[in-house]
Structures are given as C-alpha cells and as structure tokens.
Length: 344
Image (tube, rainbow, N blue to C red; front, side, top):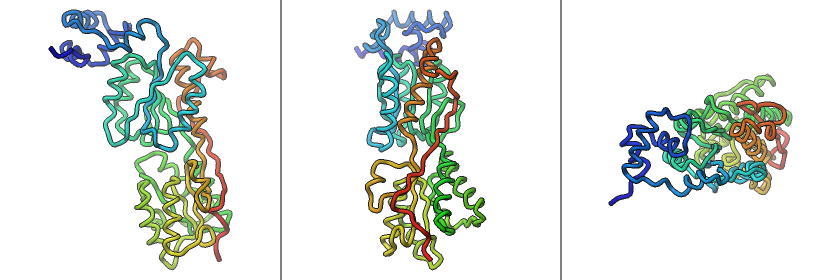
C-alpha cells in the first residue's frame, strides 16, 4: 500500500498543505473545527509525520531556511558568510534550499511548510512570482528578501543602493572628462536596473550632458549580447569613450568588445562595472566597479529575521529599536585600472 503523504491529508481534509503542517505543529493559528477534521483524517489513515517535524516537536533547535538561486552564483558565498556570522551565535541552524530562476520554486516553499522546521526564511536573488513568499508570510513565517532582483513587495528586504552606486560610477567617468558614455543596461523589469539606469541618466543631466537613447544598450545581463551590441557601437565614428555596465559580467564583455576592435582599455575606452565580484580585481585590466556590501547585506537580513522570529529578544539583534522593513545599504566605487581620462 502506498504511504499517505501530507498532500493526501490536505486533499482529503479540503485544506492546504500549509494548514496540515500548522496542525501537525500544534499552531494556534488553525481554527478548532479545521484542526479536528485534519486530526481525524490523520488518525484514520495512520499518518506519521516525517522525522524532521518530529524532531522539532521534541524541542530541538529550530532552523532558518535560506532559498538561494544556486551555490555557484558568485555573490551567494559572501551573502551566506554574512548570514552565518550572525546566526552561528544563536541556537538556530541554517538549511539551504537551492532554486534557480528557471524553475518554479513553489515546491520548495511547500517542503519548508511541510517539514515545519524553518522558523523563518531568507530569500536571495530570486526573480520569480513572489506569491508563494507572500503566502508563507501570511502563514506567520517571517520572510526577509535579500538583493531580490524583480520585486518591490510589502515584505522586509535588504538591498544595495543601486541608484547612488550608478550615479557615483557615472560621476567618476564625467570627472575624467568623458561625455559620451554608453550604458549596458540589464533587464529593465528589475527595479535594481531601473535604479541604475536612473542613476546613469541623472548623473549625465546634472553635468549638462544630453541623454542619447542610442547609447543605452539593452543587454539583459547577457554577456554575448552585450559584446555584440557594444562592438557595433564602438565601431562607429562617434563611438562612446566610456561604458557603464549594470553588472561586472557585461563589463567584461565590454572589454572584450573593445579588444575585438583593437581598442585599448582605458586609453581608448573606459569601462565601469557593478557588483565587484572577486574576479573583477584580477581581470586585465582590473575592473573599476561599484562594490555591493554582500556580507553586510546577509548579516543585516539575518538580524532582521531573528528579531522577527523572537520579538521578546529582538533587542539582542536590533539594539537601536525595531529594524526598518526596507534597508538600502550604501555601495562603494572601487577605482582600478579600467578607467582613465577621456581620449582627445
């Protein structure tokens, strides 16, 4: 006979899987009639909760869930380090769930609810429908977004200040005498890219430099696209003398496009990126870029989550009072070898 699952219990009771999970964990958020109906079905079918839920019932330390887009993403490691630097000083432990942007992560949320082990959830760099996270938050599970690309939701979040970072990067190029500055824009459906483009345009406007639509190339964060589009632009007589890329990967593509045409970086064209991933200090020439404070973003998000999980001890994690629900951390322009004075 096939073993009955929490999904089967939910179907038979006419409720969601999250409601069954709440019943299993004796949550007061379930009304008495629904609780009785679910428990009756559980007894009738001899359903046994999984081991992790049983462990929680015995009082073992709870976990904090982290949904990350993939462990190979370069910014995940410093974000994880920041989270761990805070969480390791508490009774909580961390469970990592990976979910790429190419796949629906609703099943990941279902597993977290079904296990009942995650006291709260940190979500890193997701570009998916946010409804599962809103549902999770509605169930009473604290959710904090970290550097989440495509969302402006009523959920607590931590991110870098993309607008000021972009403004400072373009201001740096203007101070070097550049007036024709291209923008390699990421997906403009992302609020972070909207902010970076707005910072680029506002810096030009403040300097009295006209905004030229052909100088903005929509690359979608895709390096091959960025290389092809910029190569065509650099091959024109009125080519730009500098490039601001919305991330480091397309900044590398910009340097490759210049090399394709025999142009030197920075003597003929300057390049600025955004992110400051570790390899940016080691490419040739080393990339001038906007550094995002990934470790501090992870640490700040962990403190916010712990304060939300344990309001009675929130002062331990937020001694200056309740943390804000939306945190913008400052960026830093790291000047290296890929930028120089505008050519004559």
